[in-house]
Structures are given as C-alpha cells and as structure tokens.
Length: 136
Image: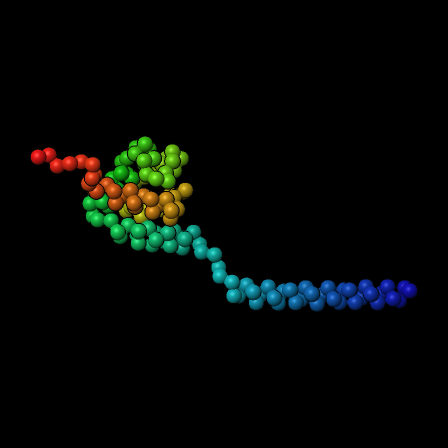
C-alpha cells in the first residue's frame, strides 16, 4: 500500500511538472502573436488623427469660430454643445489654450463621440437660421 501511494505521488509530481512545462510553452507562443497595447503617446496620436479627419469637414470660418469658442467660451457656452455637461465643460476650460480644435479630443472625458458633437456644433456656427426672413 505504501509503495502504491509513493508511486501515485511520483506520477502526480511528474504530471504536474509536464503541465507547467506545457503551459509555459503555450503562453510564450501566445504572447508572440498577441498585439501589444498602444502606449499613451500612440493612443494620443490615434485620437488626434481621428479628430483631424472629423475637423476636415469644417470650413476655415467654422474652424475659427469653433476654436474661439473652445478657447474663450464660458462653461455655459460649452454646455450648449450636445454631449457636454458641466464637468466636461470644466475639463475643456482647464485644458486651455488650444492651438487646434483636434487637441480637445485629448481632454479627459472627451472621446470620439463627444468630439463628433463638438464638430457638428462647429458646423452650425455659420449656418443661417431658416426662421429669419430677409427684410424687404
């Protein structure tokens, strides 16, 4: 009986050693095929690229007005933009000044969705209201 238990223990130890060895080989081959997470700088560059694509649809006048709003507008002005509440507006104000509109996407709490809303708001800055009629 004692010999049987010893044999079982030896077999279990050998099996455990093989399992650890196989797991190590699998994880090393797995890590070579997985993608590395982007660094903070790489992520910022990707976000700015996305933002530049979105702002390319703005005219130069719209860009100027939107940049002025982002740099000089009050928190109340910024809250008028869809998707921006008081906290996000405060973050935008705190991160001033902006040289370019696309820098806003790097502000904490401003992702691609919010930035899309900012650009949409920028497009509306030079549109004429259809409710206003020409004076005759």
